[in-house]
Image 1 (cartoon, rainbow, N blue to C red):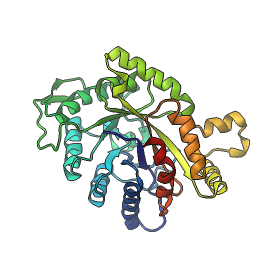
Image 2 (tube, one colour):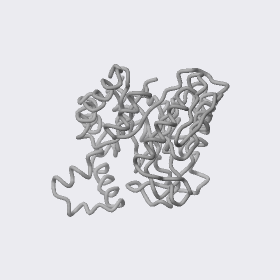
Image 3 (cartoon, one colour):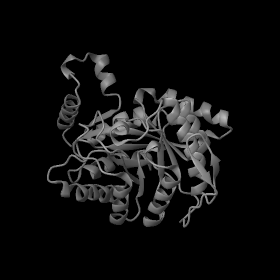
Length: 326
């Protein structure tokens, strides 16, 4: 497994009717594959997230959508970013991702996290619990999922989950990758050191040096070679051939999400935009090299919330970014 340049699609608020949403997603996935991205990723949510839009904006079920993308593409890896553990029984999740792997001829990645969006849990009837509860559940889930993906038959009588010589047949391979996603330096990174092939670090870009040090510490505690875990960073990219248009997209995006941009001082602006990479393709490439790759992260997963659905935008981003991670 290697995700050095991933394309996340977190936004389905497109022009047109609901019937136009999936064709627009598939067009982006095909463009990502053709232009050099090595993975396409969708969110595992049921409502749109704060910071991207209103809960009532369109959101699609992740694994159904990934199966559709599998049928429309040939080589690109397929994943969530990331699966919320609280939404599925772990053995069922292992079966789901294994079936996606079969459907896609060995292109699935299981990306998973503890879950955090309380509104979805409350309104859809999923147990939310405490922060500690959710990480205990994730740990137990991985004790079931990891062996199921590797041909084992897990046996667990846990606080949250049970598994008894659980079967998972058929499988394309016993090497389906596991990715952990999150920013927790103790719990998430500790689980990554125990179970993951890849860690997608969710944080402000300015925090990356500290996060990488924390991952190294968790690997040392687990007796694992730090170099055996690949890392990536999720970047919010706003790109246009006209840099001024890209910067206006950024301003409009911040205003839409409730930020009073005119009231921000320099420190406030830096904090509000710490995960954003904005400007021309060359501008964005320079920022990602300096702020993400130079500190030691292996790869980058980008989204293009304002304009990724416009044909040519995904390819424009890939042309600038692919050389950085090749």
